[in-house]
Length: 480
Image (cartoon, rainbow, N blue to C red):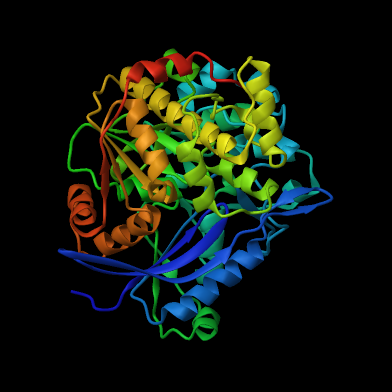
């Protein structure tokens, strides 16, 4: 068994981290080496990711990690960098919350009607999907000069290795992949005017992605060769790979800035009912489908904290636990909460618009957010089970929100199902497990999940109270 650890570069919407893991068939230990902020930057032309600062954080983290057996990179989805003919980045990648894609979808639907687009790609409508970002860039000097498009993890992999590829789980979020074939939706791209030759060849989790370049080895102090392994580079795909499910009929909620709630399926669900319910069919490891709904998640609380001057979250949660339950609820999946800024006022306005009491204190606002998220989790899991014709016996909550005991308990109460919370660092664990599997250290997906269940701390929450209160609250969830 290898004694040198694997390194996971795990980039989230608010922070990045480099972690190392020692993996054997019976042991899995994860260590954080370096954590760094991910701060979007607004310039006159819009909201961007500071991709060079992120790359510097990756290099710093690899230096702190010490010698590693291989490296894998995962991040959020849809955003990308454009390279010119010399392979040089043409500008900082746009942030998916940038407003330039507002109302662009209607232009795409004129060429590819919404029902045909869903039937071909199975991807829910979100205004920031890569398809709409490319449509928004049409006619720009940057897109005209572009010869290559790399999604964020693929861009960082290119800078580390000099090799280009398009990882499939992340590519499936672009709204340009057919989830049934795992290949490009050629007809959609042609009708929408998207040049698929911008994308390098597809890679799948476990494929080799290259080796660290000599100057990267010098920068990090590592001794080569150090391979870079293609992992499930969409962080949700990595997180789902590490769901510690030992049951057949489970649902998952990947919580953090977003909540992604749904099921793991063997085939996509592309019915008209699924489209109307705004479910997405993204790809996971081993050809699986992540059938899920995007919910705003703890972004709502993060934005309130920012507006309040970053108060201690422990105190906010203690106040929320003591506040009156289900006093006011909002639709936590509504796109009106997507943009940054003024979140407490927007939540209050949404409550006021439907005749519900406005939250008057920070504790009441926090309770409104957590009740609303639990309600959105309930609705998403019930809808997914109905649309996929699959029973659900237990809900697994993974990601940062697994540390939020109040949210986990409220989710169990709302769903009327037991919730198993943990691991919090599911994306990093899924990242290193795919590397270890490619290395022959662990076996199939079931063995990976059993290893997580046997080695990581988990907390079980049983449902409490009367489910009818949640049913009544569902009828008055306010939209912004």
